[in-house]
Image 1 (cartoon, one colour):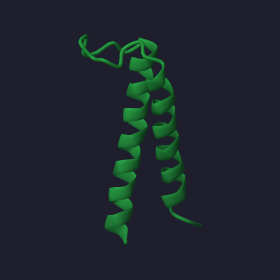
Image 2 (spheres, one colour; image 1 turned 180 degrees about the horizontal axis):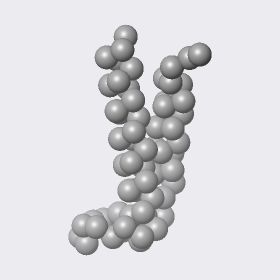
Image 3 (cartoon, helix red, strand yellow; image 1 turned 60 degrees about the vertical axis):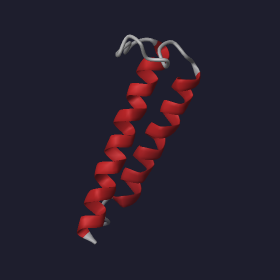
Image 4 (tube, helix red, strand yellow; image 1 turned 45 degrees about the vertical axis):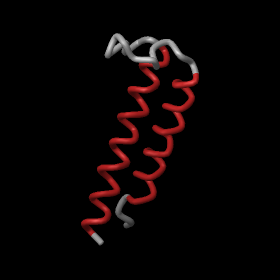
Length: 66
């Protein structure tokens, strides 16, 4: 079970990071790469927020219980 928990934590952290990048590109704060179709496109703000929220929820769900 420990291996599964570690894999899920890595996937969850990646989801949060990718969500934050999508938010940054959607708002134009992270315009890289310059040819990206996501720059200044508001749908990517919502999609990034949803993905980041799912990642945070997963991290909270799989944290060790006390």
